[in-house]
Structure formats: C-alpha cells, structure tokens
Image (tube, rainbow, N blue to C red):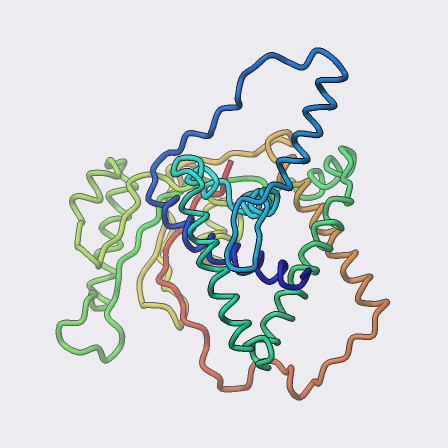
Length: 340
C-alpha cells in the first residue's frame, strides 16, 4: 500500500507539473487566493474543535479511482510541491483540472499494475532511480537548512573579494565576418570590410555620437549587432580582452576590436564603457550568504564522501577522449545583466 501510494504521488507530480506549467506560462498575471476572513476563535474549546475538524478534513476521501482512494491531505501535498506559478494557475482554474489529471494518472498506473509492468527491469530501474533521487533531495535540503552563516563571515568574505562585486555598464558591438572559404552569399563581411566597419563605428562612438543613431546609421541585419542600451556585467563575463577593458577604461571610452575565439562564429567584437559601480556590503550580502552557504554545504558533501568508500571504474568513467568533437559554441554576445 505504501509503495503504491508513493508511486502514485511521483507520477502525479510529474504529470501535473507538465499540465500546469504551460498554463502558468500562458497566464500573464495571477491573483493569489486571498485568505478567508472570519472571527477569531475566542476559546480553547473552539480552537480544539478547529484542530479536530482540520484533522478530519485532511483524512477526508476526495477521490476514488477503482480500488484507490485519495484523501484531501494527499492532494494538498501534491499541490504544495508545485511551483508558485502553477499554484497560482491552479487557484485561478480551480482544482477540477488537477483532479482530472490525477485520475488519469491513477487509471494508467492501475492498468500498468494489471499488466505487471512493475516487474519489467526497465520500469523497476526507473522507480528505484526516482526513489534514490527523492531521498537524496530530501537529505540535501535537510543539510542545507542546517548550514549557518554569520554576519562576520559575510564581512570577511566581502573584504577579501570586494573587486569581484564591481560592475561595469557597457554597450557591446559585433560585426560578423564570413568564414574562411565561405560560399557566395554567406552572411557576413570580408575581413577587410569587417575591420573598416568596426573602425567606423568605434570612431563614431568616440566622437560622442548618440548610440541609437550609431545603431541606425550602421545597421546591417544579421551582420552588425549593436547594444543601444548598456548592459551591466561583472568581471569574467566577457572575452578576456574585453573584460579587462571594461574595468580599466574610463567612462565613455571605446575598446579595441577583438576577433572571436576559434570555434565560435567569426566576428569582430568591441565595447563602449558607459560607467562603473562598486557595490557595498549591504547590496551583496544576500549573494555572499548564499555563496558561503553553498561552500559549507559542498564541504559537508566532500566530508561525507571522504568517510564513505566510493569506487569508480576509471576506464569507464574517463575524461573526454582526445579528438572528440567540442561542445557547440554560442555566438558572441554580452551576458545578461546580473540580478540586483
């Protein structure tokens, strides 16, 4: 019985999440349900009755599918595991769509049991993997909740890593080049044309021309890409040469043009520095706390591993083979601005 309920819950969460998330994405805004209003309990007796009624309500059977009975507490548990967006969608739509999906899950799982699919080695492996993952997630959350970070630790970390929290506002410009040996009609400019175009844009920016006018004057769809609004970056988020320029050049300065690295679409890239900002400790304290919390959690996991016999077949779990194809590279572009 316990195993069956566990399997049903796992399947329900998967199916319900798949059902509710698209609806949540399509919904531009959701209005959370407002708490019910009413007079507060005025006596110990009324509080006791409310508790008893709540317990009885949670044990109430709210669905029957074949031989399976589902209580209100089981449905409430599934709802609590949904994302906030999915819960808002559910509040707007009511519980009926969820009930229909859960009934479908139970019907399929019952039929799977009738077909003895649980004895299939593949299904058994999936169930066992899900069980291991669920237990691992529960233990990870338990360990994470027990990690503590003090204000002194946050202060010491900020002092030691202060430069990492300096940001720069930049506009990035990309001039796409044709690959060597490209066929006629391939998108991009020749190396000479790309250099001339990049130099002309850099000259216009250095002369103080409005960036929106620069973007308009030098517009070439899919060839010249310009940021009309500045992006906020931190160290290490651009190509090394551009990253260095972003934090060394004065406000308003324009960097030299750089070629994109091998393995990426050929282009010339440069930036205009708009401004700099050095965050204070208060601004980044939550971020530092999360970083320290993760460090401590990683250390606990490493300690747990060191106390446990972990063996791997080195021939099977080996690194990348020489000559193996590299992972596909993304076109050059400035990363999104970090969240404040």
